[in-house]
Length: 170
Image 1 (cartoon, one colour):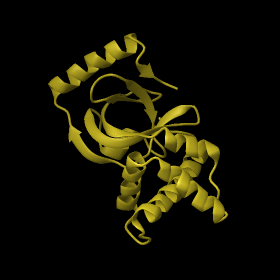
Image 2: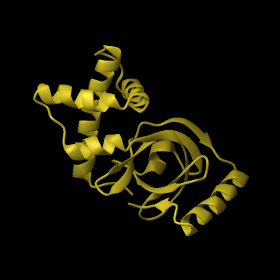
Image 3: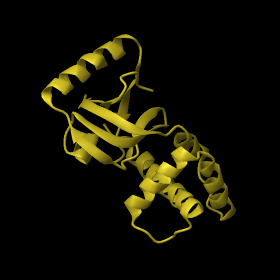
Image 4: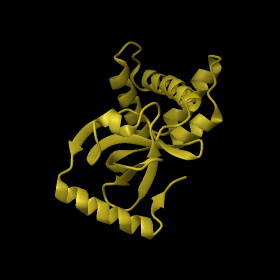
């Protein structure tokens, strides 16, 4: 339920570089704690998508160009509160809170269950389309555990989404 380790390493390295550059361009700060900085930069990208191109150009001018595939992935970023319902042997099931779409999501270096300490939670995390799969960016916040009734309701809703073609695996 994770992507290829080589791809994960490349994604993490490039995503971190890009978000650090976004943070520098949007906040002017260089030395801050890594995870809060990445989260702030990710929020800035969602608020102002043109920061992706500006940061990528800045890195390219510095001789550190990023792969196009990564830039496309970051442009696909869906940052929101998700329902992380459950795991299968191949992926984790994420649904948007309004129940309109569901996704088969992979972790980067560890299963998402390990990242958040279980399933059936609502969490804020970024989901991106990378290398023909949906992945989470691993920057987690706002975790809320779901009770039995909510789990059952979301499981029923997921079955309907899957049946109606609103479950995306690639």
